[in-house]
Image 1 (cartoon, helix red, strand yellow):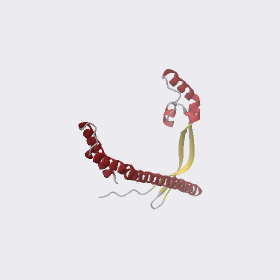
Image 2 (image 1 turned 135 degrees about the horizontal axis):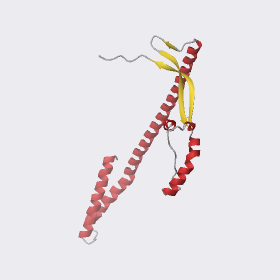
Image 3 (image 1 turned 90 degrees about the vertical axis):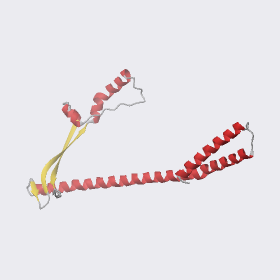
Amino acid sequence: MNNAEINETMLALSQKSWALELMYNENGGEVTPETEALEADIQDLTERLLNEGVDSLGRWLKGKQDEIATYKAEKAAAEAKIRAAQKTEEFIKTKIYYLLEATGQDKVKGSFYGFALSESKKTSIRDEKVNERWLADVQRAARAFAGLPDCIDVYLKTTTTRLTEAGLDEFVDVATAPTVKFSKPRAGKED
C-alpha cells in the first residue's frame, strides 16, 4: 500500500463513515442491510489501514531513517577525510618550511608552484577569563531585572576582533607558528 492508496483508503473511510452517520440519522438509528453493508466496508477499510497502511508507513519511515543514518555516516567519513587531508596539508607546509630554512631561502619558485616563509597567527577567546569577569553579573542582572527564570541559561558570546577593537587584549590568546605561503598556477582565461 503506497501513500496514494493510503490517502484514497482514508478518504473512502471518511466518506463511508459520514454516509453511515447520515443513514442512521435519517432512519432513526435502525440497523438495515444498507447500514450493515456500510459498517462491513468501514471495518474492512479500517483493518486495511491498520495493517497494510501501518506496515507501509513503517517501512517508508524506516527507509528514511536508514537513509538519514547513511548520510550522517557519509558526512562523518567525509569530515574524517577532510581532517586527515588538513593534517597532511600542514605536514607538507612544515616540510616546505624546513626545506626553505635548510637552503637559506625566504621564498622559492618552481616551474609551477611557489612558496614563501610566513607565520600563521591563530587567535582564540579566553572564554574562562571572559566568563569569570562578566557571566555571574550578567546572569544576576538577567534574573533580577528581566525576570529570566532559572531554567534558562545565559551565555556570553563575542569575537576576538571585537575584543581587540575594544582594547580587551587580555581576553585574547594569540598563537603563532611558522608556515609558508603557497602560490599555484592560475586557471587560464577562456576565450
